[in-house]
Length: 538
Ligand code: AHR
Image 1 (cartoon, rainbow, N blue to C red):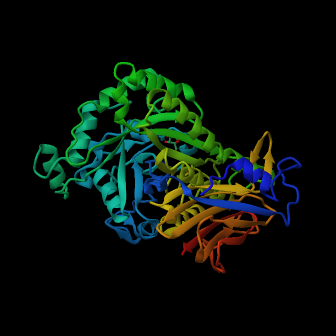
Image 2: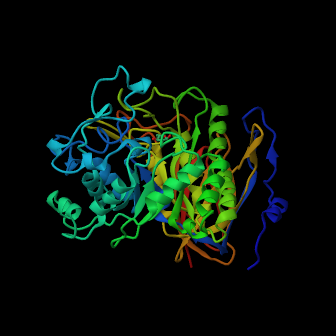
Image 3: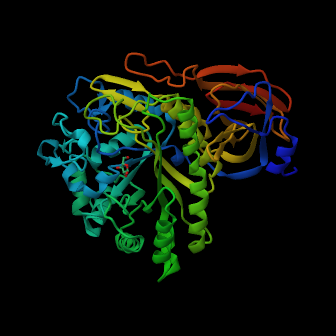
């Protein structure tokens, strides 16, 4: 089958061309047809389910008031864990959850969180001194009772069929504390004092934790290290860690956004004495928050909409740039990305409760940020083995909001639910041709997305970022015959649309059957939408 180059499309497609804009706003493109070409013979790599991972830190309302309600609570729970959360997470397919931070991880002593709950110590939370929490009522957001520790976290992961990813404390604990945590989790039943301690706590069999983070943001809250200093710490922490039956996969603290000096400095220093040290880095923990645009999570205009979406897709440049730097030291690219914090970050003011530090209400705009980002990860399935949206509940780009017995899913949840169909599929190169939207000196693709193949089923997800224009696209799958399909669409006429405790179903995906047969499909992507098409191929 002929390989189709993007430049060929730019010549062919009737609807291409950059739209000239009033600042931040697209001109009319109505009636212009667009193209999406799914190239079945250009596989990129298998989409790891861990790309659809989560992050849960001891911060604000994530753990207490979010995940953990306690066994004696009147709020329905499984062993103290909020039932509604577990029930919804089970619909997203197996994945991974990172815990206990974030910045909190580098202040955490794992021993505080095991053993009988009533005897566990209370500690000041890492975030206690933030201005937001001053004046807020005292409680677990300020003083952590340690009721949710390693055992409870692993129980949560088992309930939702996720792999645990534990982030170790490099700033204020020792390498010994780290490998003893590994031993507590993974040593065979009865083998060591720590294995017997685990058994006494109710968990005879090893947890089999594979993913271990070595610090967090070690260039900042995780120790203010230089990349060279951090490389030394990484080597020290990962030397002679007991393997047991779960061979550890170490995730190193990566850069903040575009800081290539951190990436270059770390890998250069790590490999100076022995190139093989790079084999110890399973994942490079890039963090990228696209921030905000406008006055707040709910207070923004069309120009801010495009600005934020434009900042979200910077993720793709970051992956490509850091990948090239990593390749200078790791030609075979043994190390892949574990993008263990990503999402939008809006100013305070829309959180579900006064103690929910960094809590925010997510709108349709955030759903598009999530979809654009997940599509980028799918398109780079050969480079990204894990990603963790920040954070699961009551925080930045959350899938859920909860307070006491109230619980609601955000539009981000619906994106994850729709995109779960990509997990374990073969990512396929897909070329989108649609009028671009100019955003300052950047251009936002008029349609963007990703495709994956699962035996004879094709999953195609598409974002139409235009607030005003429907994009009618001809979808071509050269070499395939389409039997049938269905479509799920998440959209709304109000770009500020969001779900709340009072109105939980403002934004929910709508399902349609598609009339398809033959080789091509024509589909109209509504304005401001995330669409998932599933088509069965003959
Ligand atoms: O997600 C909130 C915080 O953002 C994390 O604790 C930290 O790693 C990052 O700076």
